[in-house]
Image (cartoon, rainbow, N blue to C red; front, side):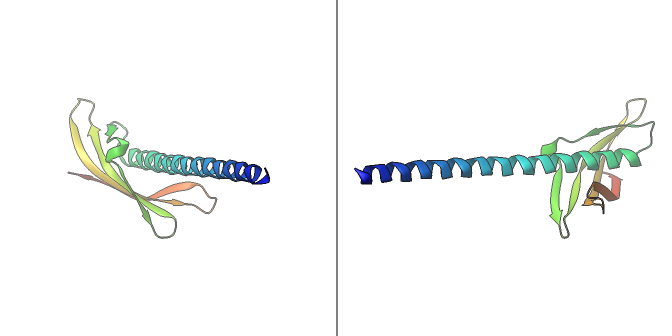
Length: 117
């Protein structure tokens, strides 16, 4: 009788551990997606800051935007952006920038480059 109770406890414990592992894996994936989105958003803001105010921008989708980790908790973000004049003429540009954590812990951008293709 005690063996059966022990087996039930072992199976229940394994189920709890499996559920915790699945939850951890899902939260890690969401966290990676969240930091990717934050890095892409900040890079786009940095690019908009370098483009003349009278021009509009249209960026590549997230799947076409590259986020590469660098040493020192820094990231290189790159992709393309269409720069659109008031008349509607668009010119595609490649952009890249480095994202890092400033001394206050906030994300910041530097080395912003926007180059025509």
